[in-house]
Structures are given as C-alpha cells and as structure tokens.
Length: 201
Image 1 (cartoon, rainbow, N blue to C red):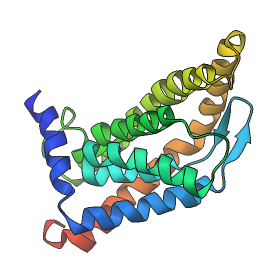
Image 2 (tube, helix red, strand yellow; image 1 turned 45 degrees about the horizontal axis):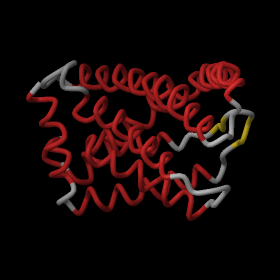
Image 3 (tube, rainbow, N blue to C red; image 1 turned 90 degrees about the vertical axis):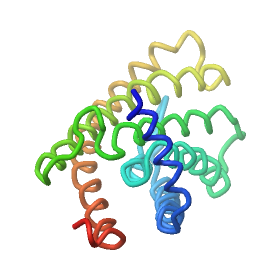
C-alpha cells in the first residue's frame, strides 16, 4: 500500500523537472491535434487523444497525468469550442489521466518491482490493456454516459441504449486502441530514456 501512495509522491516530484513540464506540454499539444480529427457519432465520438495522456501517465505518473487530463479538456475546449463549458467533464478527463498514471507509471508496481527488459516490456503491455479497459468501462461507459444524461444530451429513457452504443463503439475501437498503445508506449519510453536518462539505457 505504501508503494502505491509513493506513486503519487514520486509523480508530484516529476513536476519539478523541466523535462516533465516540456514533454507534458508537447503531449497536451499532440492531444489537441488528435482531437481535431475527432469523428462524432451517436452517443459518443471516435478519437485517439487518450494516447497522449497514456504516454504522460507512463513517463510521469498519476499526479502529472491527473493534472494533464484536466488541462487537455480545458485547452481542448478553448481550441475547439463546441457547445457549453461543463466543469464535470474536466473532472472526468482528470480521472482518465489518473487511470493511465496509476496503471502505467513504473509499469504497475503490483506487477513488478525491478525486472529485465523483456519482463519490463511485458509489464507495459499488460498494464496498457488494463488501463484501456478501465478507461472504457469507467470513463466512457459510466461517467461520460451519466454526465451526458445529467446535462440532457441523452434522455433518461435512452440510457441503456447509449451504453450499448458506446459499448459496441469501444469494443470495435479496442482493435485499434490496443495495438496503438503497444507501439506508442515502448517507443515513447525508449525515446525518453535515450534523451533524458542515457545512463539508464
């Protein structure tokens, strides 16, 4: 349990590093770029902006990804203002960042402590699948659907219809989401280690 709470402490310490602030800013900008290619569909939308938050969570942990999730939502609204501004969606975006930070930072401490390269890569893959499934189940299917219903975007009578539509959409998307995470996360970690942690490579 102590190691779990240390994730947040260590992640908060990352905020003191210029590399953290710089790379986080870059990936927030990348998230905005990806958002511009969003495809709107009934009861949801298709985009891969979660990849940027996943990378931030992997590199800098839950504290940084929690904050970054909120910033992505705020900046996203400023860059692509559509409809009203609802703070609850900021909180939902922050919880999404939290999921990726907890699951991916240091490759999930409850899965491994210190492993060799192959085991490390395997831990990233397993953690990526868990993180994406939690994101889909908690954020996409439950919180976003409830928020949309609360604000009247979805009629109460259509709640389960919306959940079903989102479930089908996310199930199809997972076929692309998981391979993209498998490529993006190890690549981002490799680049970060070579650029900022040369002695650790």
